[in-house]
Length: 308
Image 1 (cartoon, rainbow, N blue to C red):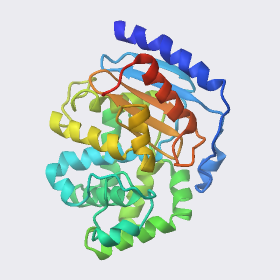
Image 2: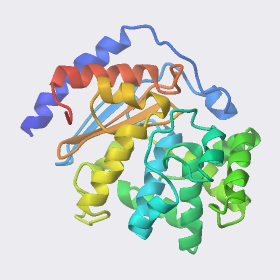
Image 3: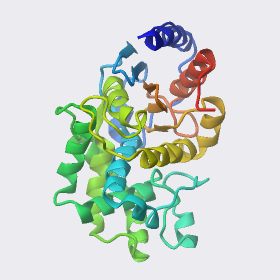
Image 4: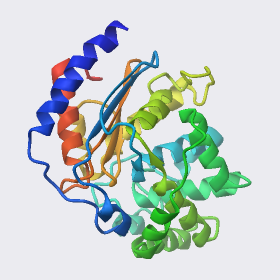
């Protein structure tokens, strides 16, 4: 409990500091449903590996976690295929936009990493190949990680994403032309849109990500979801690729592995200590939560703790 007592005053102090600053950025309004979100929402939740929580702001409000969910699909695919996963998708930062087609031509349909859209589509294809009902089993897996049976896909967001998903359609078909999509592109895209539509709160997210702070083992029922080595590798990919083309900046300023989503959420992990989820819907020019990035930089500076 001593560690929690150390974090709590710093977390609240930094939260108040960020609240006093201008709420800069803009909503991800290219997805119609995300344009409707209250842009003033701000939430933080920290969960220690001893399952103690600190929450401030709207930390129990659910929001569209978007690309943060790509970590869940990767965990499940890696659990199934282990090292073979990396024959289908790389582990390098892309250096280009998350929905870029450019590198797929020179890389022969192998996406640079599992967190850009093309990589997440390949991961969805893997799940469809190896699971009887990928959509149902993926959701159940996320529910198990978070110990919450009420987490669901959002049909409204699925339809909203499908209505503007032309580039994702192009990505999926382009990868299919190289043979790195095995299933029907429509089925792969449907799973992908559902994956990105999942709604969770900061409290639920920080709890679900604890498995990556605890060497792959659940802090709830002690179930081993990943080996320690697999956990290390997923954290490493988050460190280098978790924030689109701002990943280097996040590593430099925050010093923790993590993953962001265009719904304004960020999850960061301090292995063996805690996970922290932040939500503020307005995004910076790189597509990451403006307030969220600032909060985490200040927080790790104040605590003087990072993985470095």
